[in-house]
Image (cartoon, rainbow, N blue to C red; front, side):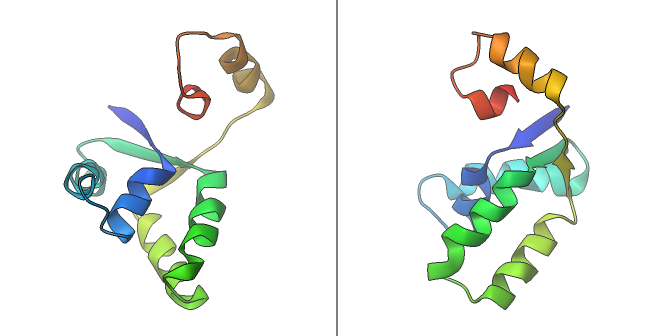
Length: 98
């Protein structure tokens, strides 16, 4: 199984946000163990780095994100994939469609 890990999943864990922390942790645990293949969008990395500035130093944010990238791949998207996603109407969240 292949999944796209949304920005909020990472934030749930790094900020220990209740009630989502446990579910998000379980999903990332599956990625870390290799049970599922996890991807994260490139823009999610910069968004997470920015959002966490209030909670962690720049150095700590770098370390946290490097740790996340030990078990998540960066999702590549090309023009044709974006066009196909734009033509679909069966996804509520456009980022998930990408």
